[in-house]
Length: 461
Ligand code: UD1
Ligand code: MG
Image (cartoon, rainbow, N blue to C red):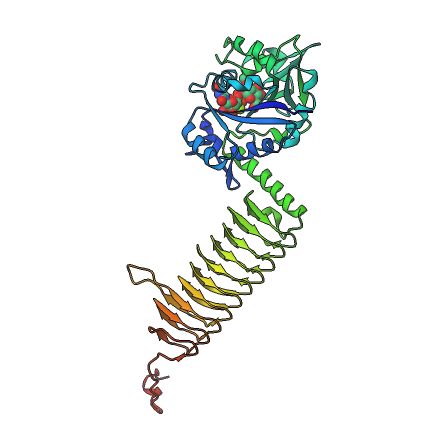
């Protein structure tokens, strides 16, 4: 059977003034993405029809176009414009005006850009019922129906009465309009042009497409909370909490263990492999790929990182735009800055900062060091208090250290500098000249010891 065609209209022209954000409401940040991303996600999973998605934009449309255009370039999302916000019915008229091919499809699904909790299953309930009707609205029983359109049912058909237009006991109706609809396009062709704005708001209501004596129906969905609309900061936070719980649950079901699941911040873009353990108060953001059996201890912050199997990120480490190989050990209190590329079995210990540097397999920088613009070979041991002096005030310079080198504690490398394999640098050395393979260097002033002279410098008791 050939699949039916369905256009999706996402209404996003409204101002969203109550959120008080510098960005339009559709781009309100949530779990490392935006409200709009969470609206698009479940829609992209639908497979009942061939879908073509379009947005109705008005307020700050250029910003939304730019975001969607670059992030979903492969999906070819259609942009339509509603310059003046004359109501949801007017928004759908604008959609069809700018995207007339939508009327040649079988259905038009309408939803809003500010309901980020909807799932694939919610939309599927509409598709399973559309054969018997011309138009469907998803409804739910609201604990407090205030602000929603009330569903008034007749023997045949129904109407939706907006809060502002309710009279008498109509306000007490608990079944309300969720703002999600599925129309047969034949029905829209007949009725959409006839909408008027003779109502309390003076707007063209989409909800007026639902009429008595028409084949229109309300499908009552069991769960009210899923329709949460984001209009202000507290609703944005409520939605974030629910989506965060869903993300944690998704990872738990894949075999990731959370020591304190309610305390973590994990973007929806994060992948974590099974057997990994995430400690309390961990924050993982951006494009992150964490493989299996990785341990991330309390308070660690990770942004845009790749971490291979079996690695341990100890407490309070900060990793950004970095790569760590398998069975490595980072921290506690380590900082990996952009371009840190640590291979398998490396160790970066406490109070060590690594920037734009490669540490090859098995190398260790265990304590209190700065490694910047460096390339350190395999199995090198870098002692405590090591510093690459990479910056001369104008330019950055490279430090290259070969395989199996031993660098004693408290050494500085004045870059640019290069040490071959198997070099040994004595503790306390400031290295200014290149060393060939197998060289030994000591670069510190000679010790002078004067017998019995200490008492001259010690305070008298
Ligand atoms: C709407 C419904 C109401 C329903 C409620 C569910 C109508 C007339 N009422 O009311 O029955 O219970 O949603 O949340 O539809 N928008 C535009 N252009 C406009 C107006 C709105 O694109 O001219 C967009 C908004 O950006 C928003 C969506 O449409 O994404 C809904 O608009 P909103 O003003 O929030 O409608 P409600 O008053 O909540
Ligand atoms: Mg609303």
